[in-house]
Image (tube, rainbow, N blue to C red; front, top):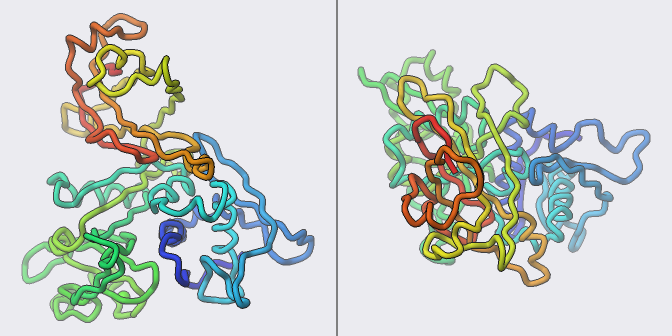
Amino acid sequence: MGIHSPLYLPSSPWQMSVLVAIASLTLNQKALTRVVPQDQGFGSGYAGIFHFQFWQHSEWLDVVIDDRLPTFKDRLVFLHSADHNEFWSALLEKAYAKLNGSYEALKGGSAIEAMEDFTGGVAENFQIREAPEDFFEILEKALKRGSLLGCSIDTLNASESEARTSLGLIKGHAYTVTGLDQVNFHGQRIKLIRVRNPWGQVEWNGPWSDSSPEWRSVDLEEQKRLGHTALDDGEFWMAFKDFKIHFDKVEICNLTPDALEDSALHRWEVTIHQGSWVRGSTAGGCRNFLDTFWTNPQIKLSLTERDEGQEGCTFLAALMQKDRRRLKRFGANMLTIGYAIYQCPDKDGHLSRDFFRYHASLARSKTFINLREVSERFQLPPGDYI
Ligand code: CA
């Protein structure tokens, strides 16, 4: 299957999340060939079927579809490539819709969910206004690890969605982050970020944009290193400080060892636990319900490796509810989920109500919320936690 031309989506913005996830997937060849196995095409032995692979609850699932795609007046209804002879994106979308139960079930999904399903990665959300001081370094490390990064500008209401600002940014639109770097500019080091509009058009026109005068003061070699061009391809640089002003949200899909085979990249160690929250027995609610909180599944976490030059260990804790989207057509909604992290006492076994009565949590998810997944980054000293 040839993968060359830009992707387009005619008129259904609710499918946007899948488009963005596919667009950022195309930036990572290794991850892409996992989802879209390359040994398929319309050549000899063609049987009218295609298969794709998605990460679902700690394993790769193979999804087989036939080659019929929904059309209206001879045009593809959903996702398609700019090149009318290129069908992989539409077929991938169909397989993903099948995995989720229907095209309709993709509605309301977020780009980061699809990125996780395409890579086996673990999501992390940042509100830029509340981002940590070393945000640039966090993003830089994530990109170096091969993670997929998305960013967007919040909208206040539906009418603002896709509204274009005077600086060439589009509200509610999902962008991908494709680079971070620093340049010498009048004796100063300036932090820059490269952002890409997956629609391939409409670019930022402020400082450090394609034909902005700042570039004239940058060494040619450096321009080359940064791949600075003035192509109207949807990709542009901007100063990181402007990025923090104009964008609201960054989502990182942290790739785990399973998605990355390159040992040269700095990877995460990953452990996965399955739990079951059953009404009346193990669905104990949040800490406000002291009498039942202790009945929730308790999962042990051991931190052993300190961050370089620091006392604490950084880790991501992600809690995901399975299969709710597939149950949507039977009227099921996402459940409200969240977690709290406690220091583990020396003894083994399930912690009792009294433990939670007398011990405060050391960290917790920011909110209990009805999303498919809540995930957050923490730093705690080495030790055992529940
Ligand atoms: Ca450009």
